Image (cartoon, rainbow, N blue to C red; front, side, top):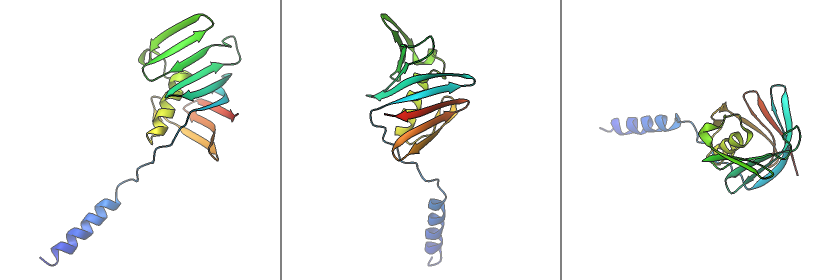
Length: 144
């Protein structure tokens, strides 16, 4: 009996040491920055805003200039001038910038590093995001 207790204690220590450390959540306070959204050979300049758990992307170049896309986790809204169109998030392609950034910011807040397109990487300089990459998409940021 005297030998079993230390053996069980040692076994418990070994099993506890085998678990992967949990990633702490990242605080993603409301923020706004200019960025270039690139996918393949297509890119556009935009302003990204994360506010009240909603991702906003406003296009600042191309023929879509002035278009704002937003995602609140339930739906994606497209607005430009008087035009407003809403779609369920599941009906919008996963590469949509607003949907993608909503998934990334939400994952970061929960300590994750995956979205519907797979694992993403976030590069930071001090507390500022400089680039977000997932698959063949990169969002290169220049914080205000």
